[in-house]
Image (cartoon, one colour):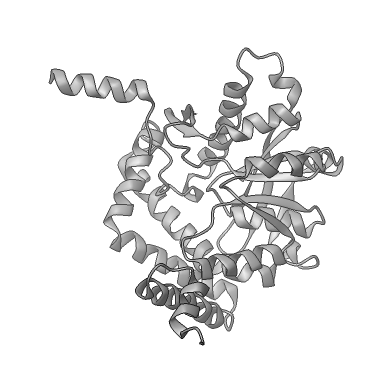
Length: 329
């Protein structure tokens, strides 16, 4: 007996119901159609359109707008007035609309072994490249800042193979599309869930391992200072560095002017010799790379994803203090 077409559809989309399967197919077809349309126009024109769509995102999504400003006020409120904070937040929406709607789709065609220099300039990468070319393994970190996808893609185009840790998107069809795009650029991929089992093997082979280091790690994460507030941060990065005794390279790709123009730079290299004599190496490492990310973001705050829920979870002592104040109020 032949399997019904609905069974094939459910298997293809990995969906629990037909309604979800059809929604996932619709999302995937919309993405492929969008990619086809923007492929007919120059990227600079597409980026101008995406920037306008970022302004629509800002105007239409009050919840996202409020979250971005709620994150910005305690982070930069002491040095920026309300008007400046609103400007930073709105430009952040415009910046990431350009990345997600245009650059993510078009980068594989625009950044090749021969053409990457038209869009990307390298800024004093010598010490970091030496670490990568030694073949002893290294951990590369960035955040939801600048164009983090372009950062790894360009390094691969320079002939340095990278393994990146990624969180799969909810739609498996779109996730497979993104995987194909990233692998076409030379990236090897590891899913975040269960990464600790194989991450050490990557470093043992002398290969660089890449993380987005500003993800909220939940209540079990390590809380360190980030823009003056405690932020839950994954312990796995520091633990891997300690266990494998490899340096941590904190870098970024920032937009230097309107359009598809970026500069790749290293903010800091954290060497094993810096943490080995510390009382709490794990805490010191985690704070060091978080501070390095913060220093870079402060220079280009419009290119940080302020709508990202970086401070979602709070330390237990902070929650306990809030509970006590509530009871006494």
